[in-house]
Image (cartoon, rainbow, N blue to C red):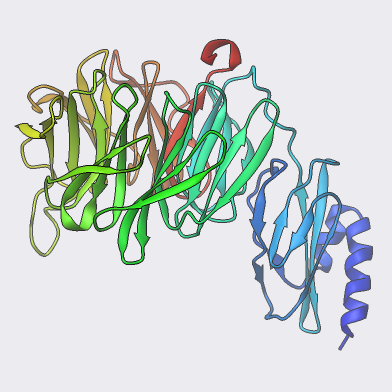
Length: 411
């Protein structure tokens, strides 16, 4: 058997050799996305094929810290090496150029692979990945070109600035679920599924100060009213919705909504809050899901509309131009189209790919990530027809989509 030093020497020789030689000499493998990584990405190094302990090394830009590799800005490729007396793994990573702020792109939160950046026009080609040291559950982009996300099974949030490109990590943000920027203050808000046995809301201010407020059980859904500086949070496991002051993080009130209140959407004027009950007819309790509308214009929330029984609703998006709601059904692989005033169906459900998750509306286009088919569907909201090139392939298990239209259009 080769000694550890001999294996390391072989690794270094392999790193300098052409890529086919690197691949054939490895006795293990390092799991990475099949895309070029953006500078500033943090990638957990997972070695398959042999057990540790093993030494980790990088030939190229960036640095290894423990079992994490942070991608550097120099060069167009780096080689990761894992070596022990049990085996050797070598993986070359392409380093992507930083995004052009003037060029539109689509960002997809892929649970398996990080944030995947795509061309904003058909065929929606995947260009690069941003590793965030965990699995992202959501993604948001504000008008200044800041991309926000959080590790849904980790303890950090990430904000990437487009111009100039910079990636910042914020610790102390456990089990992040949904994320959204407040248009007034520039703060990033993150719902936390579990903080000491309860749910919470985290605020990362524009100058990087992190604050947190513990709320109900299992905080997931999120909606922001920038005009009144209110943040609405869905507490799934106690069926309540918290209303939090966006500036002070004080919980103003909490009201009972529906069982398993999961996703939230807000009308354009902030007067109506829409909540999804993520129940399923196929569950042992045969409890149907639904959408409920609340008048939140005053100090007390008042229920004003309730949909019919829905199969297994999960995500929701509000369309102010047509006064409609789009609600994904993870069991039926479809999208309900509801009148935002009456919550009655105004169109037959749109069929889509497998397990549609959190929909998002961007300038007349409805983006629907389909978790189990690793694709994103796109519909024109004027015609309710699928657009050319959709659904398109993306990273593994996509959960959310955000779009950047370029500095000239977003500024």
